[in-house]
Image 1 (tube, rainbow, N blue to C red):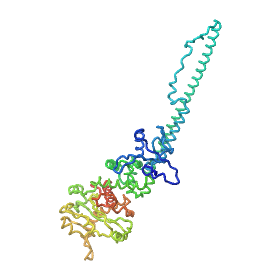
Image 2 (image 1 turned 60 degrees about the horizontal axis):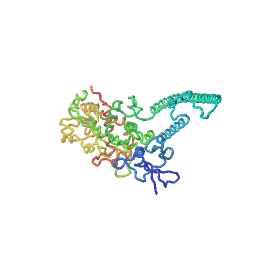
Image 3 (image 1 turned 30 degrees about the horizontal axis):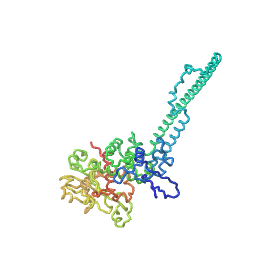
Image 4 (image 1 turned 180 degrees about the vertical axis):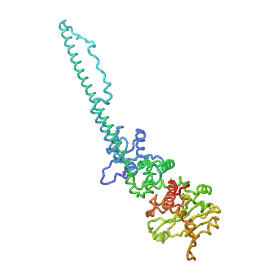
Length: 514
């Protein structure tokens, strides 16, 4: 009869060649219900609906999940329940340590004359035998014979008492030696435990994990791009919405969040992060997109279109003189991506300006330098004008009559904004049809460029702070991922850009408000 191991991620079966395996049934529900529950808790297998899995009559576990290769009925033995599983990191090492600890305890208990070292204090002193009533023999003897017999009996009892006292003294001496040995072993154990804790702290301080940024603002800014206080508060807010309770087994919530930001900040590959954490690459990839979606949905209020009142209240004084009704500064930027295999897709994403396959994004920032609008990503072939028209930015719900919008000279959308929103699009002057610009146009363009440069600083800040946008993105990070909500048409690159914009807004403004 074929047998397959029921452990998560275990593919062992009884037809496997080249390896000798044994298979053991789960404890009976009637005879050993407590041990059966402990086995199920150790396996941690769930049904398709997320409920607790219940083994069938022929469900088995292979010998690979036991330290000694087989279950043991002794309760304090490490193999009383299975402990080695693929989804639990370092479970093999922990199991061997538990087995060695158990063997040491067994060895120590055999060396001691008592079942427990503390029981040596409970040895009762032997009762004095001198007080016992000696019964003379019943046979009739003469007075001399009776007296001689009583003396010999008394001497024999004295010898027995002396022998017992000597044995008691030897037991007490052995007890004292055991006490001294136990105290010495406890001191050594405590000393080694302290050394182990110190080495563990030093190792954790040098390994890439969330603990490396605890209490260090400079390291936190380097690895995550956020100040330490913002990083801590952001994590505390997001961890309440983590949907999967089982993700703690392989990596803690804080490490998952930390490595997601490290991936964005330093563009470290999933393979490198998998080696650092000892977790499968597919698991790290899943954690990354889980937290990207978490930030995208739960912190979306950090990237919203501001109201006219908030813009006016935070408008820097340098802007009030030249553009008192300014609401935003707009521009487009491109990100390199891998060349798609499909020829039609390759033609859509090829940029003549960059001479490379790219995705183009339209961005708007407030006068204070906060990202307030990011369009969905388009292929690099699209023009800036077409991208703005298709992005939905020209909308009367976003702009009020009289609003001023700064843009580069390539955004020829003055009529569109004036017609739809009654807003004013301000761009630098052209030399088209003129030999040169007038002095007034030159001065106006210079003043405009000194303010419009802020959107380019914001774009540079996004790319420099989260370097994943500086390198060439794989096609898998650009297209939509399998398993996303059916009513959500945003692709992976759209979520990625929105998250980078949210994190940049969390990091503080690039424009100092005076």
